[in-house]
Length: 375
Image 1 (cartoon, rainbow, N blue to C red):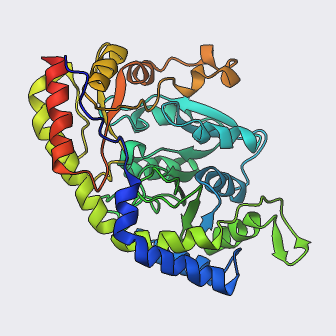
Image 2 (cartoon, helix red, strand yellow):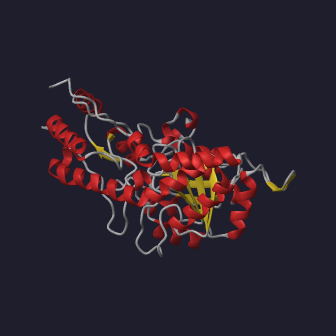
């Protein structure tokens, strides 16, 4: 096997920046000149643009996706004695914020096809302590929010969408609303590697509920109702003005980028379909679209597969190698759960390069390398 192929990038943000350099530099210069680095006018401008894109009445930017999730739970009054039903197959922040507000995460297994929280298993996990169902729209595909909404209404619960990987994904029948605006509150991340990312940590919350919006606005600035007048417990959760200007410009290009991501994923799907069980390709349900935060497949002997691809100049990543109930910090929860689909996915999942500006020749190189390794 050849070892002298020039490596292709797993993610290349430099090309994207070059395409937007003049607009971004102009925006940054404007902020440097007016000097309102915290809660400057571009913050509200970005929030209005993000809300319009998602189809939500209200948006508040936040310092990170983690802070966005925490603001959502705090606004709903989630705290000690409460339970939040969520997935164990996600980034750690999903469960972390539940624990940080003093509540208990209750893990439910995933749908083995979409890797999202399985709605058929959720109702059995509801107790008198349950306050929120928090699905994750993993890898860019919205979770089953029609079903979660029905369950929540039946039991008097809130639905919080963890849209850290899926902002802007489409869901048929949602009235034009996109991922991020599919629950009582949605929270997303603008970490640079996300489909829509800024140039540092960032996030946002979305809601149609004015009361929740106003409460989250206070929570974001240390619980302030007015200057030095604190009426609720809060955090320092603001996103700085420069990052908001970057989001404004990147949002202008985002529709095109989503189309490009879908095109790359389609090329992969068509090329890999014949590999069958050797490489299980991702499935997107017919009533929704994905923004393809990752192109994640299942393989046997993942470490060997990754090593051989690396020799051919193709990088990979794993999202995620351990379900959350297996994390050391949750050791007391490990034996409480039997989540076979989450554990299977964690052992076999591996992500291939995919980004909006990925050249077709790089896509073809990935396809050729995968076929060579699995031949």
